[in-house]
Length: 267
Ligand SMILES: Nc1ncnc2c1ncn2[C@@H]1O[C@H](COP(=O)(O)OP(=O)(O)O)[C@@H](O)[C@H]1O
Ligand SMILES: [Mg+2]
Image 1 (cartoon, protein in one colour):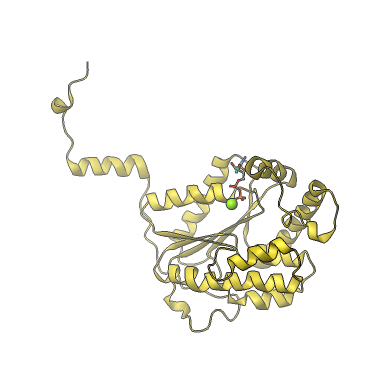
Image 2: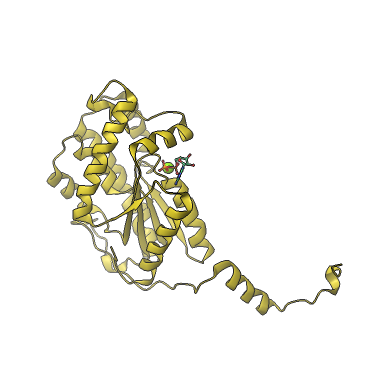
């Protein structure tokens, strides 16, 4: 029989804290070294690169590739190990996101206009979320970044040089993980999540097929090919996102731990 609580030997606070460290964290706490950032091009006017510390981690992948699932776990893990995080994603800026959603519903904008709309939203988030976060030494986690924006435009025939110039405002991330998932798995997961496929993520505006399933699979194949092409220039890591959630998470954590220890990009 167990003794009542009052009779159990009580641990000192220090001992209890040690136990928590050993059991819950299981590892040393990583203290971030300074890591000045680069821009891909001209950057944002008036921003001093050397004032930026922290880390910028990007998770890329199609709709249904598991970004939200992985991101939520990464944030729990990072915050649980004492790191301040902030999150950023596409179409979240308060500046233009309402207008962007309206424009998408209308399906009437030209490719260049749509492209500039997204770029405006992105610039707003760089300036108001990413840069302040890095300046404060946070681990900023981006749910998609310029690569998705570029891939969507490239598949629609927009000029690559023009896009590279446009996204020269972007900070070079410390690590980019691209969750690559087969189109067939993406279809299943999108149905599990939203009971359907998104018009734009299926490339329906491209006239590939009137059948949204066929269009989705073909469009995602083209996007995967473009990501593989972009990978050669931008050097991000391709992570096999078809695997179990835990396996994908373990690979992401190992990669992030490496960039937290290193004072610069490891990819
Ligand atoms: N590795 C995985 N294996 C199987 N299903 C997954 C996996 N990761 C996510 N899912 C499921 O797929 C759906 C889409 O995941 P989600 O994280 O919302 O993707 P995203 O944010 O990239 O659109 C959800 O129902 C989620 O539970
Ligand atoms: Mg998501």
